[in-house]
Length: 201
Picture 1 (tube, rainbow, N blue to C red):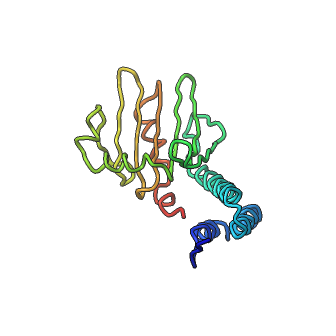
Picture 2 (picture 1 turned 90 degrees about the horizontal axis):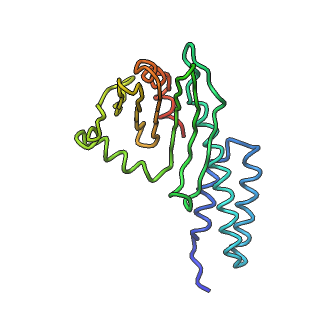
Picture 3 (picture 1 turned 45 degrees about the vertical axis):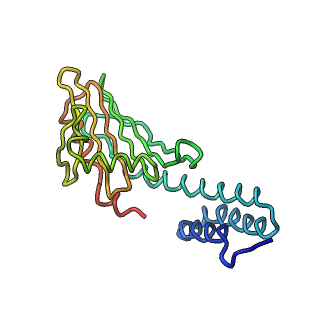
């Protein structure tokens, strides 16, 4: 059987290890899965090796989702918030990605903040932001919020709107509200710490 000096499986394992060295509790499960995958690869159990690497990757995505939750803003004055949630999907599900989301309410007003990363949809969003005509083709307007370019869509008649921002080419932020004033939609967006999010590993 032909074997490469540096196998794809080994490279994948090393890549995964880079993300877990700072978290001993997670590293136990992740490194156990990676080490088991390497043993299975060496013995020719390729299906098992892939399964263990996929499991380790999922654990890492889950940890990243937990990190994203910390960037979801606290409720502004007069609003209440539900617990933040996160979801990690492998590449087999809609191309993969990590999502963190939190819902807010004030009487009949509702708003959600969602942060997505490691998703194939980022490429399409980057193309949209680089083309102002495309970005505003469905009624949105380009605005600056805390120094970041945003696509803002708001209907005074419906009192509903959406703010979309891409941070560092890696994070897609969507702030969406119904029965809400535009100033509250903007205030929640401004409460997100863009610079700290951009620095997230």
